[in-house]
Image 1: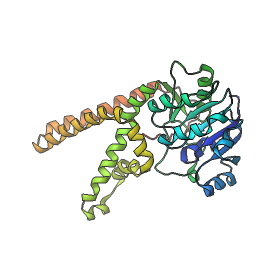
Image 2: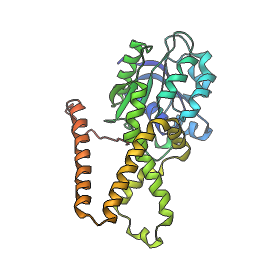
Image 3: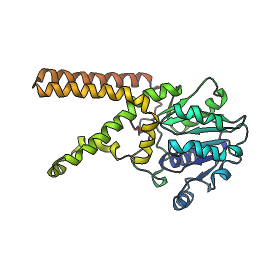
Image 4: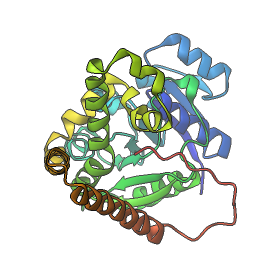
Length: 304
């Protein structure tokens, strides 16, 4: 793909830092300018080559032909409002937010004429936060949703799809509403369940800590996610989460009733049906994936 002349990354946490570092490593932008709240982290990012320079948000976007908003979801509107007047016609603005409906309704209206908004959601990350964990390969093999509405500029969308593909992501296109409904199932509700279980551990016997194994670690990993970030995400997508969360509650009740009545056959059927659901999901995922590129060592870092 043709490199962007100047890329501005507003918010240098894990995702913003990884986008910046990945773009630099792959030559996707001639210069990468970053900004954020922590001066020490910004200097570290400069010293370690994550970005070429640091600047205030309004300075960072001047002359940029790609702006990536990587702040928490509820801070994106105010951040973009602050810099909008400095954006030049032809600039592409995207974000890495985990909720797309509210952003697609608010962010485009803030932009000057000729500036194009295309939403993005790379489904990759970690419970760790901060630019010190920035990884240029974070998006390798991970899905990245690019959202479009009838008003989305076709050329801007095509260029952004090429950008994420060059970062190693497997790009899929969805409308904002489709994105929010689907990600509620595969990302947001799993986080809710992990948070609830981790919160309930306050009632667990102290001695049980010695018995933690790989299953415990796998299930609770995402419960270590950042509280402020995930409070924003869950609040912004609360309407789409309600249905899946109700369905999971119903299934938990079904399993609890089978256990309370000592109905081993029902428990076995429940577990078998669960395995079948997962198998169907994996089969769908494999059928949607492109043919292997020949790089047998490509690693995936999906975050569900």
